[in-house]
Length: 400
Length: 172
Image (tube, rainbow over all chains, first blue to last red):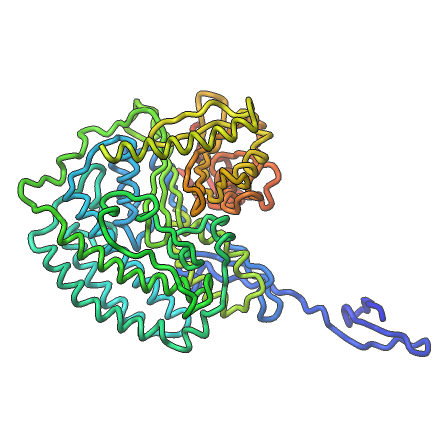
């Protein structure tokens, strides 16, 4: 048996019988097809392009192409003062602006070495956790849509609307808040804010359970996600994964617990990891489960903050804000737990200027997405959709 | 102040980790800078960077298994470009340490560490995209955020933006 290339037939396998060439198999080596998914594709959650090399329905290789939403965040930072960077951080991860502002603010505060009023810290944690719930609701809802479940999406967006209204009431904006400033807040929370938040928490707890039953215990959803895109813990760490992605692989790692900042050490909450009873550890379902469980923990944190928060008497949210922010020469790497993982800022100050010499944003989605090539190898195209959805990317943060 | 003691404790751990590296590589690494915000050391002989990285990842008392961040830096008045890597022993020993590596501004190169930490793969591509740092041995060395045919490296301090890109006026 040998392989020949016969004009008109392509590559064929032949055998010889009585001096005659007998074709036994034809067209075995099927051509691999390049399939471009995106940048305008609903399941890529934004302007991400995946160039897939497919063999039939199986993906041999998927190469991500980024940069369609690149807005030169780091170049801007070198040209504006420290406080003026805060609004730009909102626009990186636009689904969790509060968390991005929080990460940036604590980084610069570390460099300035200033003390923050306790009430400010609690308000920051409340708004950040509210925003984390809103962000997880989008992640869960759109993930359902990716896999064909439309109803959970409507439930998620209905409840997210309540959170956005609360945050709008506090900051004046629905998504791009500019609320957490370096050293303080742009304004105090409205008088009845904590009461309304408490009402929301009471309203939302049963809704979260219903959502859990509707999607996470849905058999079709489970079959689409269980055992798909498994990432072992050590490889996940080597890829630099963080947040729900890393916890989905069974690593109990949460910056709120392991590198604590703000008032998180005083709060009692669980770091959610899958226990392996409902999912295979490290698969798409595990990552989804972590997000679903974290919503409950965020609700717990909010309740604790409301009860522990000092009263508003004589409170000035701008008391600790420096008149002129000019840190001493030095470098800092600060980070915080975002809904998508570790958001870090590396800031270099020359000690003379009111603008940073260098400000690098370490984006969690950017790092999480870099494992895409490894995760997608050998998967089916519909499973690729499940994998992209489970990474929960926001392209604004990937491309910055 | 309680927070002050926490910070100095983590700097102490970083210093202990540095001592092991210093013992192995001697004068190839600089003195330890134990500042409170980001303790670091510099790699003076860039050609050893890959060995140092592997040593830091695999040594039983170091176990820096997690690269949090890799940032390109332009030290403009000096004729140098560099990278800053924030490393951490995640889940194992818990210590953190930053490493700086630099190379000459023109014609210099830094060995890649994407074979040591996968995280470095895309971050090094980004550092090349923004600063034009050459990473020798990188498996997939191209731009990542800017288009492939973009001219110049935007985050260099002496960057001049190109006049037009495919007939589109660039300066806004």
